[in-house]
Image: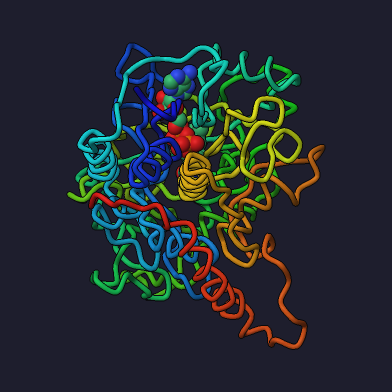
Length: 451
Ligand code: FAD
């Protein structure tokens, strides 16, 4: 029999299972996909499926908070990072992956681990006893969401998130579009041309924005209208509503992109990023939308180079469920009202694949320590892991609590006399120093099996 029950085999649940098993703990991992259930965004039965972008964002550990988080997770033997590194595709200084290869890698490692039992089942209630980690994500099955609302004594918050369209490469007209990275800064191991760029002149851009604003959208119910978006995944039409130039300063920014046919920057650009290792699928960067499907096809085919585009997936819009963690959880991610239950992943109100996996990693390590009769101290606040955990369990005001990506704003401030250009490095150097001692404690129980 198992010692810990993990509910949800996404980014967080898979990582938590791995961390526990690597510490010698027997785990039951329940995943509803593959047992007749699906979420509105997932498309496969694989564990750790990435539902939208194929990017883990910046991999720069010296000047970017999420890059630093990658580095900390690798140091702690993260399964998600190991499999992401193994499935990398070119994306400049970002870590983007072939999503199928990545999810298959995670699924195989979990299935092969002797201490993990993967069970394809939907769990509809919170277990009354036994150490449990709830990692059911932003699209938690409604039955379980109700049970959580019952246990927490307050309604969950729900809001929306959007999916960017994916285009078949062969349907892109490369006599109009061209490959390049902004300012020619490509990934070090690639040819420096990581994106496909589609140019627009002013008339084309203005017509596009007008079409976007006029196009039919998926209808919202009233309570849905009152709910905010993640800034990072805001639909293009919502950006367009903010003003005619907003998109040109956002996802359609042309700066640093010389069109080889004119030698100049276009008025606006639509960028596509490689979505699979074969290079056959490309996603439209930042183009999440709630436009109706037929309207998307019609409008996106007005983009120069995409006149004959074939879409592997159109943009969409989905619910996001999370709990008011600062009030409901203690510093060990345990539900105050039922401390045998921990929460992990996006349902805690972190935001993003990497952050979700990171909180899963922490929940796993903390549970393993507890089983060993110890308490694992929270990671130092100066580290990316500590800053993220602090946001979830401590720092934020519970009333206005919102999901957040890891960022330097969550770190304790640096001394004022550190100059602006040295500040990012100041944060990351300080974090590396702070992680070292904690890491030794965190990994004390490790009896590793290699990923
Ligand atoms: P998930 O990866 O969703 O895993 C939860 C798992 O639990 C799922 O496999 C689900 O099937 C299972 N489950 C749910 N209920 C039950 C139940 N009752 N019993 C058993 N199993 C259950 N982040 C980014 O960094 N970049 C993006 O581009 C991005 N786009 C997103 C787009 C959408 C539409 C959504 C909803 C989220 C997006 N996110 C994105 C946010 C977030 O990073 C991902 O959702 C991430 O997968 C969260 O990880 P998780 O492990 O918490 O949840």
